Length: 152
Image 1 (cartoon, helix red, strand yellow):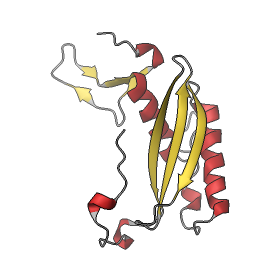
Image 2: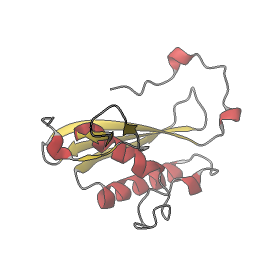
Image 3: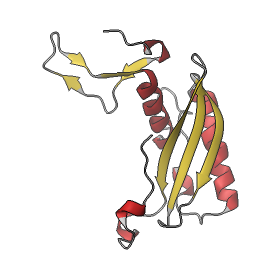
Image 4: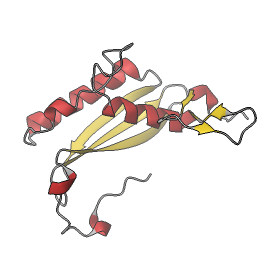
């Protein structure tokens, strides 16, 4: 079955999953815009050096994990995200990358990438929550309805 956005790319679902009900048995795939968003998520969560065949692939966000949140840190994160997208995601042009710290949840940076898909000239956004604190240090005092929504 060919989708209208298959030309945007098609790749393995990550983590790899297999569909034993299909005949012949197959690997689950993602295509189109979902493939681009999955690729961005993988790019931002991969450390350079993790992939043996592409040692430069990744965004290198883990080394800033224990630094205090400041304007300089936000500028460094923005630069790393923009550079990683420039080198490793040729299907999109990043229009704007913003880094913000929501006041209701300390230790969380929301990385928002506004981008344009080159082949269709359509604009989308991708929000990646980067948690600087361990889950054990997060306060439960915030009302869940007041937390940011990551849906489109």
